[in-house]
Each structure stands twice: as C-alpha cells, then as structure tokens.
Length: 72
Image 1: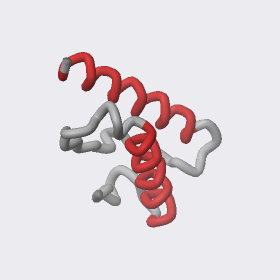
Image 2: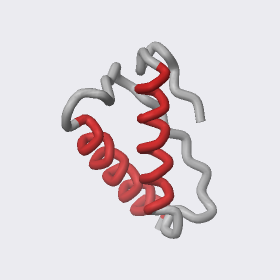
Image 3: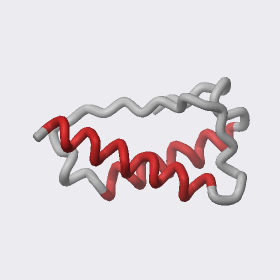
C-alpha cells in the first residue's frame, strides 16, 4: 500500500491512514473476498485532526458497500 506525501504530509499520518484502511478492509474482507481493491487518497487530509478517523471509516464503509452493490 502506498500513500503519497502530496496527500498526507508526515510519515506518522500516512501510517495512520494505512492502518485505518487495513482495519476497514479486514472488517469487510469476507464480503470483499476475491476482489483486488485500490484505495486512493484524493484530497489532502490530516489524520491527526479530531474526527478524521471517523470520517475516513465512514467513507471506506460507503465505498465497500458501493463496490458490493456493483459486484452483485
């Protein structure tokens, strides 16, 4: 998994985003079995800010559901 410095400035922040994405994928791994998924950080985010982890989790959950709707 790679996250660009352009999207997330510090290594600590990039690692936090990676952990969050991995955790979310693990929670939905059974439903997403057999799929290869690419996650791209589009906007500049600061995962250290309060509430960003919740927003990132909601966004990932929404995207997993969207993928599953298209896949079925």
